Length: 348
Ligand SMILES: Cc1cc2nc3c(=O)[nH]c(=O)nc-3n(C[C@H](O)[C@H](O)[C@H](O)COP(=O)(O)O)c2cc1C
Image (cartoon, rainbow, N blue to C red):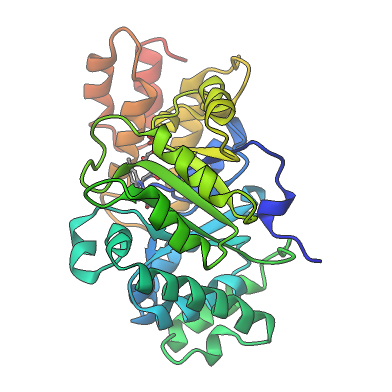
């Protein structure tokens, strides 16, 4: 029997949560190198966009071999587009495909995707079935060139990247990431509905959509999912407010999850995944992040360094003169300037 990534990973699994605008290929490289989470996800990407020739979205699907196991996360509301995008993702060599059913973004409300799917469980289930169908179609020899809504431009790019894949997964996994409810928690019935489609794993953020990121995640709700999934073979990862390796282990033991995803606590701190304190200067890591960022996005235009500044703000969080340093960093245009500021404040 071929194994998916979920069957191969040792438990508890401690992964880096997908975060749009944060967990790009560069962030993942740094987190993997210095924190070594068991699992990485891409930022979410729209299947409608992919199937309407938004070639630029393929950038979200960039990864390196060191990042395995790597999961591509997608969102949308059109089951057929999920099927075709699944074929494309298999061809790109991803270890897994994750369907986002938890994002609260306003733009998703209109579309009926993300957390809106909690309100339309029949559609959510059809989306899982069609994504699974895409994986099966790929196994049966279908490729992106055979998908009616994938443009020749996208097909061409996929073909090129396909040749660069080294370590192919034995079998591509399918998972879902969601929240415990829309307005109120409905964990048991919602998770039961998803379980009928047998995803290999469900990552559950212990907040409702209405809560967005306020209050605390309810791990009691997450336990209800653990109960519902018992004996089904589907793994449950808990998510929400985990802030250290020790915290992750405590949550696993207390709530019975198969693992956890850590999101915000990884900002400027890849060591969050490590059991032991690391004897590495975090500002050297920040510089490496800058260098790799510049190199990766060298063709990205005039303001290309701008998105890097938020990471720099996170790296200096907690130092005594953070405010002063941050003000300078927020004007930095390149790695060299960042290095100068770090030296000025004797951080390196
Ligand atoms: C900036 C940001 C972007 C996010 N983008 C995504 C996303 O693309 N896909 C997703 O499933 N969740 C996304 N999330 C939710 C996180 O994956 C995670 O569920 C949430 O932050 C709670 O975990 P934490 O308390 O460890 O941060 C995002 C969260 C943040 C803060």
